[in-house]
Each structure stands twice: as C-alpha cells, then as structure tokens.
Length: 100
Image (cartoon, rainbow, N blue to C red; front, side, top):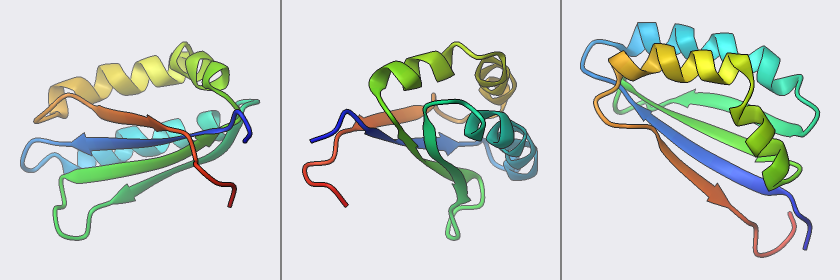
C-alpha cells in the first residue's frame, strides 16, 4: 500500500451563499493543483442542495496535505469561506484499502 491519501471535504453554506462559495472555491483550484504533492483537487456542487459543495482530493502523502494547509491560498480559502458556512468544514482524510 502506498502513502497516498485521499480527502473528502464538505462545504455546507448558509442559504443563498452558493455563488459566493463557488467563487472562493474556484480561486483555490489552480494553485492547489500546482502543489508538488497534489494528484487530484476537484470541487463539486451538490445537484440536490445548491449551497453544498464536495471536494475530492488525492495527495502523495499526509505530509503533502499538511504542506497544503500551510499555503497562503488555502488559508485565504478558509478565511473567506468561514462567514459563508452553515457548519464548519467537514474534512475526512482517507487511506485506500486497495489500489485503484
């Protein structure tokens, strides 16, 4: 088994904040994808709940994810999202039981 990890991050916005949240999320995509340890960084919008977004991420290691959390673009993401959220970010870090 590799040291690769996967992340599922759920962003639940307050009612009516979907457009603002989408703008914040999209600004973070390009710099995150450019990070050395990033293998996948894709935001999705819930088709049944417009104010809910889900990120699927893959990182080479937990250390790469930790470096991501220290970047300015991630800190900006969290700072700009916080007033728009109905609940705190829900981040789950996963390890695959088998390789794809």
